[in-house]
Length: 355
Image (cartoon, rainbow, N blue to C red; front, side, top):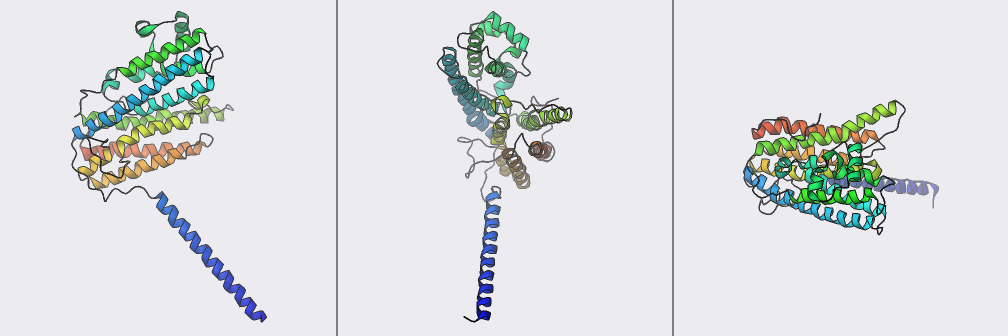
């Protein structure tokens, strides 16, 4: 073949390969764009929902359901702790069951409503910080049964007490610490069993909305930003980072669980229009049913931003946590200004507000 023809052939092949590469790159970009594209609910026809539709659906299909799920996990934790205290289960297996149970609790308690408010359930079983001196005193007394455990202060029992005991060398089969842990679990089962979701006020949209806003604030500030700032100070002073639940490897998972419990009440997560008799009617659906489409679209956008940021959370990269804090703060700001105005509700102090 003539040298000039060989040169032209090579150039043609290179151009062809270049175009293939460009086309492949464009196809990849298009695919990623579609993959990253947020859910579009504009083609779904939402009916008018009233406040009772929203609140009754959350009671029946979120709170009652998640309470039953938590009770199942607590009963499994009771069984696991009994096996451990009899010498028939490894500590790591008990830790794993504890972790599952605590994440179920965070989903349920993300937005505190109804009997959880009336019974002060969060204080009863998740009082923080734990008072170690009170815990040690309770272990010495070895309370047994509902009446005896009722005399033990909240700062010495519940989830924080179990977390602490799981890390102690004295927490062994047959030890007083083990006996007390079993009583703590049974006490939590009684507390959660007392959550009666029948007859809950299903018309107070203002309270419900404020609890949603407060829960968003709690996630952003109390759960993420507060330990983030504390760690920055500790690192600047030459110390080491100390994240909540890091001993159990649960830090990012606790944030994700709390967000899941909140997101279920904020945005539509199905491809069908929610039926209050069958599913939760989240805030987004409520807004769409009222014809407030722009607010609903922006709410979905803000919630998707929080979900994406939380998915990328990595406590070894504090900048990722900062992004999650920012996204949650933007969502909170949007809720307490634009959405509150659109729903004609006033912002008040909620039980989820932090310091």
